[in-house]
Length: 384
Image (cartoon, rainbow, N blue to C red; front, side):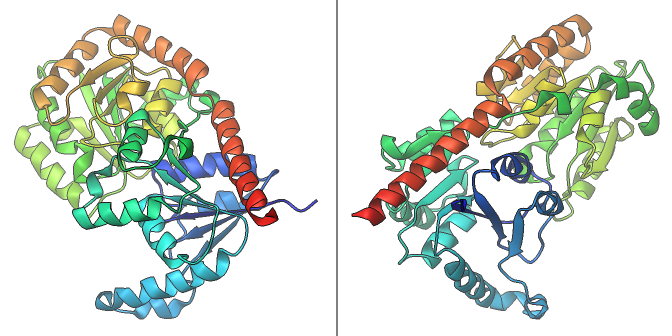
C-alpha cells in the first residue's frame, strides 16, 4: 500500500536544535509516511546524510551550481527560483514548514494550493516586524494546524488569531540513553586537558548574540577566582562573534577558563565530562540542549525565556534566573559550583523528569496524530 506523502520544508539541516529534532523524529516516522525534506539553501547540512541513510530524500530548492555565482544583490532571483521549484513539489500530501522563513516564503509560493499545511514555530516571535506580523496573520488563515514547542510559543500563536482547534503543543522528545554515558567522563576530560578536580560548566549554543554568551562571561568574571572551574563553549561561530567574545574574556581575566570548542558532533561525550549545564538565552522556543543535559543527569541554570522554565523546575531540577542578568546568573552558578550534593540531586531529578514528561515515544505519537488528523481533513475535503 502506498504511503501518504509528507513534505518537510526547512532552512537547512546544519547543526542546530530544530535540525537535530528533525534528524531524530523523521526516521521513526518513515514507516508510515513517504517523507522528503526540502531545504531552502544550496547547503544541505550535517544531518542530511543521516536522513538519507534512512531512505529519506533530502533535496535543495536550489540545485544548480549556477546559483552559487549569483551576486547577493540579486538574491530576489534566488528566492523566485526557490519558490518556483517549491510550488512544483507541493502538489500532493501534507506540507510541514519548520521555522519562520520557510513558512512565509513557502506559503506565499503555494498561495493557490489547498494544503494541508502545517507550520511549526520553534522560537518566540521577537523576529516579527510590524509587516511580518501582519503577513503571518494572513498566512495563518490558510493553515490546517500550527505547532508550538512550548506553552509560551503556543500562547503567542493563539494571540495571533489562530483558533484553538488548529493549535498543537508538541514538546521535543528524548532518548535519554543516547546522552547518558558517565563511563566516558574521565576519557573526555583527559582529551580536553581538564583535571579531575575541576568543576566543568558547559554552554551549548551557536554563537548568536541572543544566546547570551556575553552575559555568561560577565557572570563568570564575578565568580570567586579560587573556585576550580572551567567553561566549555560549544557551537558554531556567527559572523566572527567568537573573536569578540574571546577578547572580552581576555579583558575580564577569564580567558584561561574558557574552552572554545566550536560545532561538535560528540555532545553526549561533552555532557559526560560536565558537571553543570547552562542556557542563558534572551529568547528561546524550547531547547533540545536542556533535555539532552537533563538526560545526562546534569543540573541546569537557565534563563526564564520561552519554554526553559517548563522543562527546568526551579530548585528541583535546576535554577531559573532572569535573562540579561549576569549578577543573578553568577549567584546561581556559584551556588552549584560550591555544592556538589545539590548538583547531584538536581541532576537525578532532571533525568527522572525526562523519563516521565519528555519521552521520544510521546513526541512521536503526537506527530503521528497530527499528521493523521491533517491527512484525514484533506481526504474528506476531496471526497465532497
